[in-house]
Length: 110
Length: 119
Image (cartoon, rainbow over all chains, first blue to last red; front, side, top):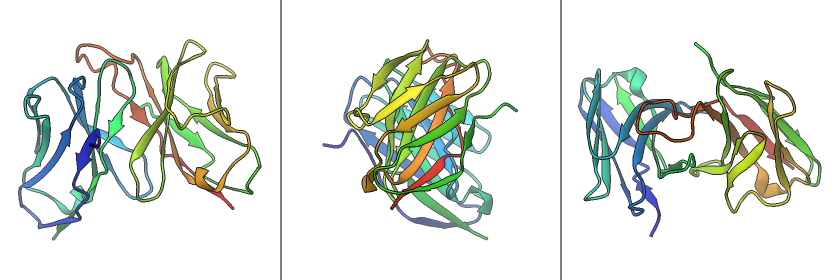
């Protein structure tokens, strides 16, 4: 079983749609959960950071962590064409080593 | 806003040659990392570095790889004898702390990457 699984997509939505991106994981030692955005041939850029279970909201973005189900989500409200990118979930335990998902490619069409 | 920078942006080398990838982490950060991403695959952890020592390394980081902080600003990844399978995007990252209870100081900031092509 892979440590982190993420549907690679691609996911295509119309502008203004609500987008839901998800990852599952197998390692119960993970405590820190992140979502990074990556544009083509660029470095990952941190979007959201959550410690343990719960929700966190930042503007149009909401991150959810359910440690009991080993499931994390990122919701994007009122999606914009500029949100078109690859979204990477990442997580770690008590060391700095990040474990990434495959990444989901999102296209928001005008 | 401070950012991590990497040079070169692209590097083409022949198999068996040595390459050095360079990174300038954010100035007050203390922890440094290298990751790589083979085209179409996941971003993979290679190594973390603190206080002039390797803190953790992955199985990928074998004897062909080494890291160094030669001065107060640069952080380098050396591949001694490149293989075809070393072709990838290499990302440097830095953070102030490696872990904490969620204060954010452990956030890893990534550079734009160096695309390495081994022929």
